[in-house]
Image (cartoon, rainbow, N blue to C red):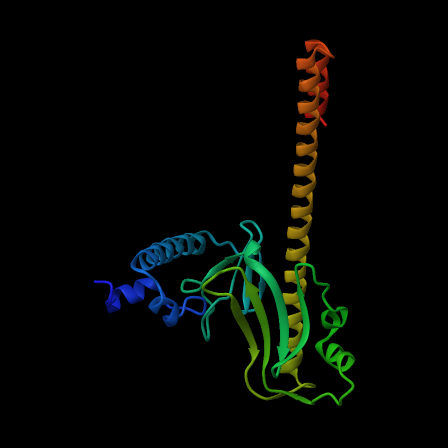
Length: 241
């Protein structure tokens, strides 16, 4: 009635990191209906991606990649990793990524950002190189923070360590190796997307340039400065550039 919303509709709205309860309270009835429609479509699309997902590269049970469809997903499960209740992100959703150790940023990467080389070859080296202070001998929390373009999931975390482990121990070394693999894969994805974007922009620029040239020759044709045959020949040359 414009004043209250039932619990069923609140569930359909989908309160999330990107759409909070405060956002709901300040929304109009039309906004709420649009939001419900968006959430419903998003759920259907995600279910479709889950059914089609084909893992081509995995980093343990932390993150799986589908290079064929250009998707990635963070599986769930304590003993067996599954994606049936996970959200499948598109590669183009990726904005940047960051390694956090005990809340401290070690390295970042993403569009327009050069990944710190030290992180690829060893987290301990990156930490030591990034600080003059004595490096801690233990790690309590190790995460990869992922920033996306998804309005409901703008930030997601991959937790690799959640309790104290010595840095010279096997657990930390294995977690570090997994982080390196994740960073390398993300950087390859970013490089590919940037390359594709550059190719598209170049192609678009060429097409616009050809269209401008054809327009100029059409004006010359209309003025009687060139013949129809000359115009057709030049147009064909420009279109085949």
